[in-house]
Each structure stands twice: as structure tokens, then as C-alpha cells.
Image 1 (cartoon, helix red, strand yellow):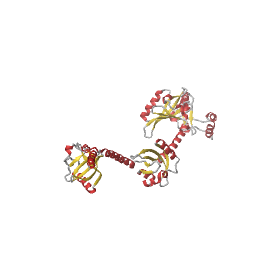
Image 2 (cartoon, helix red, strand yellow):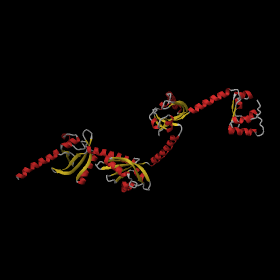
Image 3 (cartoon, helix red, strand yellow):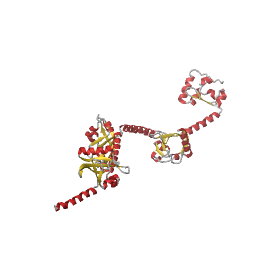
Image 4 (tube, helix red, strand yellow):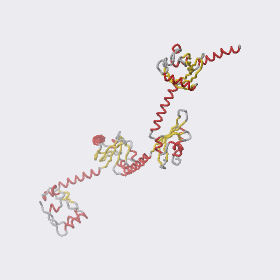
Length: 465
């Protein structure tokens, strides 16, 4: 008897310690009227009330939750006898809400049915869960709507998920893609695959190109980006983003062919081709440009200021002003400067060159050396001026005997002006009288030997105006 009497106080003390020091909230509520008859400090901390405010009052009076919520809670206990992990949103005294996960059961205290409730505050956990859920929803939305094909794999390469874009690209369902695995999608075990896998293992990321095969057997090139990450459970996963670059490949090939043709033209033209950036620095020059400006190769011209090729830099400024106003300049004559400081006359055709978005990247120009043409023109003008001043009658005509030149001497001799005579035949103007066969002989002699050889055989009577 003594021993039994000694153990009872110890047992009561232990229960009291558990009740008081338990990290979860504990409360006792009568079934009959729902009044709270006891609780620990953790419960008071949860709801923000003092013991005096709580004891003897109901959860409805404290506005902890609504009548419907309270009845649902009690009915759930009655239905299951013991209740575990029942989630309830409770309103504290200050109006804020906390999420409580309750476990409860009926017990008898002094002959009265009482509900023993143990509540765990899961507000922070719910917050984290909601954040994770929100992130998952965002990820799912992104995953389902991304335009590129995306595959999720585990470390051994097994595919565990595929986007709708991947289904569309490969022509398989997601289930079929997962069954096939990565090797079933890559064309004949593409040799680039081990390289990408090795790079991903070493760095966690990899990027390159692989050839893939569709359900219908079509082969296509894909740009691949892979990245290793951990899911919410700490499991390693690999994302593989695949973009079909068939059109880009075709465009690149077409561009390459176009560039090759373009470069071939540039490398073989006789006129100089020079391209400059927006700052006016040369970024491209043809071999003919290097030859014209006396550089050993076009590469030596790269980086030079385009203005340095003009004897007068103001000519370059004027050209740029004309480009701004007209977008194109033709037959612009200027004096150019060679590498050895000698100069020569040029004619330029210039315009802007643009990028893919239509933005100005700089200027380009075709340059023609017109020194000889200028000298020849001046010589012709000089000779023509001399001929116009002599007193002898000089007539120039083409093979059709149409007059092309008529000097002052002829005008004085026959009375026809140059305007009246040019482009007329000698027969129309001078009405010559030939002996039989003489005209044909004269034309043949002129065509074969020139006028100076034909002149001795002429015996023509010419009538003035």
C-alpha cells in the first residue's frame, strides 16, 4: 500500500509536466456545451488570449472558427472516435489566422464527456507548401507552354517527362517518349551525345547539336541545352531543351552559298570595293582595292579610316552628307590618295549597308580609277579645239557615211552649220557626183586603210549650199 501511495504523486507530476511542457497546444472542451475547461500555455500562445479570457468560454465565443467548422470538427471525432491530422484555420484574438493540425479524441473527466485536442501550428509549413505549390504551378504552366521541346531525365538518361512541344516535334505521345528514352530519339547514337553527356557531368551544363529522329523516320538537326538541377525532394534531374534548327541550317547554307558567290564577285571585280563601319573605319576591301591603293593585301586596309584614302578629307565629309540626304551617291569624282602618297582621280558609287533588322551598319563604295579616261577626254577636247580653229575643211563621218564632225572650215566653204550637217549623210548635204564604182571603192579603202589612204583616189564634185 505504501508503495502504491508513493507512485501516484510521481505519475501525476509526470502527466502535469507533459501537459505543461508539451510543444503542441493542448485543450479540454466539454462536449455538452463546448466550453474550454483547461489548456496549456502553448494553446494560449496559439490563439493570443490569456487563461482568464479562455477558461469557461467556447471557441465560438472566442471567434476561433465558425459554427459550421466547429460542428464538422466534433462530428468528425464522433465518426472516427479518434481524429488525426485534421486541418483547421483558426482566427487569433488579433484577427490574424493560423493553420492548426489537430488530433483529438473523447475522454471522460469526472464523469463528463470531454474532447481532448492536441494542435500543431503548421502556418509556416503551409506557407512553404503554398510557395512550393505556386512554384510548381508556374513551372507546370511554363513546362506545358514553352515552344521548345523539353525532356526531363534522371541520371541514367531515362526520360520521366516531356512537354507538349516535344510531343509535337517528335510525333510521339509523352508516354511513348518516356518508353523510348533518350537513345531512342537520338539519330543512330549520334557521336556528339557522349561529348555532351561528359560536359554535363563535369560542369552541370552542356550545349551543342545533335541529330534526332522523328516517329515518321524523318531526321532533323537540333540545338540542345542540358542542365542538372535538384527537384523539391532533393533528387537530381536533367532538363534537355531541344530546338529544331532545320530551317536555320538551310538558311545558313543558303547564306554561305550567297556569301561565296558574293565574295567571288568582290575578289574578281576590277573596280575597288570598300566597306566601312558606322565610325568610318574599313572592315572589308577587295583585292582590286588593295591593288588600286597600292597595299600588299586587302587585310592591310582593315581598320584604316576611309578618310585616309582621300587626298582632301573634306571630299569624304561631302560624300557622307550626300548619303544622308539621298541614301545613294553615283559618279562622285574625287582625288584619291594611295599608300605611297601619290594621288589619282576616281569616280565613286556609294550607299549604306544594313543589318538583318534594317539598321545602318556603315557604308560601302565601288571605286573606279578614271585617270586615263580623264586624260583621254582632255586630249580629245584639246584636239577637237585645235581642229575647230584650223581653216581647212575637215569632215568626220562613220561607216554609214553619216557626218560626225564638221569644223568651221567646212562651214565657211559649203555654208552648212555644224547643227545642219551632223548626223546627215554626205549625199544629203553635199550631193557628191561619183564616177561609176568610185563610191564603193572609196568606202572599202576607208574601211581597210583609213581616210588618208582613200583620199588620193577621190574625184568628187561637191556642191555648196
